[in-house]
Length: 146
Image 1: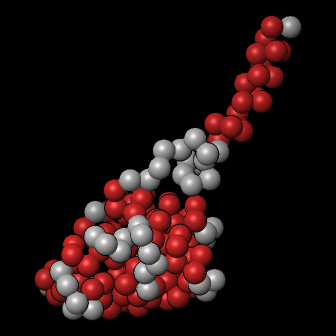
Image 2: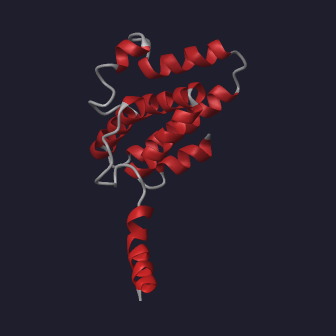
Image 3: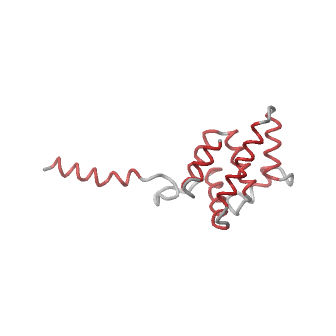
């Protein structure tokens, strides 16, 4: 009887433990650092434009194809920096007031994701997971493009 009760309790609790961690989890801590700020920016962008996900993936694929043909790391860095800021300001100065606070154009957001994936591959996995929680398929398709 006790074993059956214990088994029933464990089975009842299993779906709660199986829930994905992230935006859908009401007990999850708020996202911090670059992954959190980037996810907030993409969330704002998705809310502002219903076709944002598609435009983002198109831009991401374009950037990946462009960078794939480059052989010098400095050329890749310059290309992505220009794609994010369009020459307006250094990346940090441009992103500090924007990231996490307002929507970002799909090409800029895609270039920023690619720069993160190249510079910090482990962190990029977290960013892709967050994209997947925002819009199912978005993180998965971006990962496939990479």
